Length: 222
Ligand code: ZN
Image 1 (tube, rainbow, N blue to C red):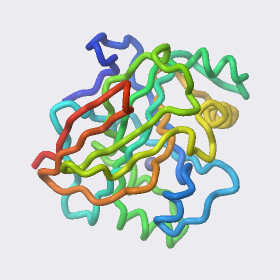
Image 2: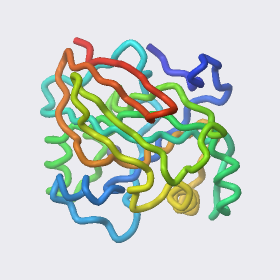
Image 3: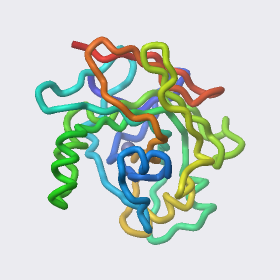
Image 4: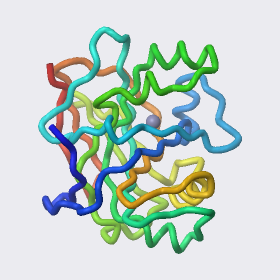
């Protein structure tokens, strides 16, 4: 199924999907669970737009390439371009919505790449590697520094975090990204995953939530 940005009420968002800019190890407890050091400066990587699929109706994961991990994250949709060290106000003005998302990761492949000091694209950028739900308008949130995010897998809560726990909070993180490369309307920011990542299998049932704002049921298709 092809992907088009939309709001939770079904309204289509007119700007096209761009790139997906991600931050790694943005929650201390998650860095610890994978035995990774907490980075001294933000660890960024980019997923191409081609890896985005809608959460609605279920999604597929690669077979025969080792373990596929879910990382549940708060996705931020940008509605305006940002570049050259934007102010906090410019970033706030550019944020158009939030959604729960999955940053799917081929964990065994990533471990091999990490050992060799190689880039992560083979583990992070495959088709279907970013599962996005419809966005809730940013105006629905009063405090961007305390947005909760949760994943329930087969009836069990596995990840339960909040932007309050981020090492790099949302607005300064986007300022940092835009100081290094341009962001466009339609780009998505994945803000890192709280602790509790794990493997997915065909048939798994997932509930992705920004509790109080968005709730999406999906599953891993054959
Ligand atoms: Zn991630």
